[in-house]
Image (tube, rainbow, N blue to C red; front, side):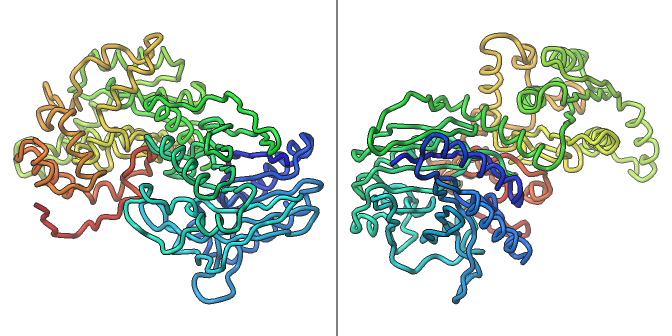
Length: 546
């Protein structure tokens, strides 16, 4: 049997666009003599549809789309993901895989294991299947069908036991000839190696070759990296899909030929490609074509400008430098040099006069108090005001430029540098920002070297340096990783060798600034724990963890 793996980029709620794409790839599969075409999880609706599932019209549109695909699957069967109605007790829908051909539904399979941790919220919407697994008999072969999480209930792959059922063990008893998996597994660093081990384990448990079709593309904060895979009966990866782009290839159960399609392995390059794809899809799927970035002359805004240029083309990116009385000549020159290197549009809009006017008008209400962070934040907010005015007038989405380290401890200004429609690097620790910058400059200078080598500064007061307010970034980033991503208590981090005063101060700042992060733009997730949909910490709380 020849099976096409169709690693496509879907958009949530774009039923017409998703159906059109599915039918186009089905034509490829038919032309290549395929018997079956496999697509990612929730192919018709896009992933994740979230509360759109509460709307009756969304469900109706998904049913119409399923019929369109069924009628379009002429001479080749399609295995697509969609939502199906649950007429029994529980949530109103199943997360399902449906096999269609020649206008008919040949087989349905409901997801058994519903993830409800980190960014996953499936138990809110779906009911898990409580029926025994069955095989789909097609062209003389016994085919097992699973959906994403169904293959993850294996020791060593989840933090603790979440489920009582193991679909793979159940399938093994049925002795399938091949197992298919429709997946929407988001990208995060080091996850690819985990998936490769998982596929090997899944193959060994079922004693059958595995075909894993993963979603690719960005939807809101999530980036899906593709990297679909096929194994032989021994668990060896014999075919792979491309990373961060749509891909199509044919698996022949009779030949098992191994192909050489490279999977990105370098962590920094994979993160870079994830940010590019996430930015491109967020901007375009939200209906924008052009973006706007405030260029400070610093490394964060430079990195965001490079990513945006790669994602959207330099002709669709505008950089704006907004010098204040404390901006250095070098920072202005570095911003201009970066824009020239990238070939993006560049504007210089000084805010000194706005700043002076604001101070004059506010001074009667400041009660002769000395200058402090108020005046510093005022500059950042005037820059935010300027960028948002340009955004309104020019119909450009503002990309905010804060990194994870600074956002974590509140070293950012609400309604100032946090303004924007997408926080591109909000899940990138500062040390990784430097790694990405050096990676970008590996062949030639794109980000000015002075931007990389100079001490980082917000330039909101004379001679200001980040390290006046923050620990060295190497220390800050590791403490944040242990606290945010590993969930270690401050005492455990201190036992690991970190200064107690520094650890307690960092943790205090993280907790105090939850209210800021709740109001920031959505950010692209690349680590195991990002600020946003996968982290739900109360703002008003008094848990004093030791």
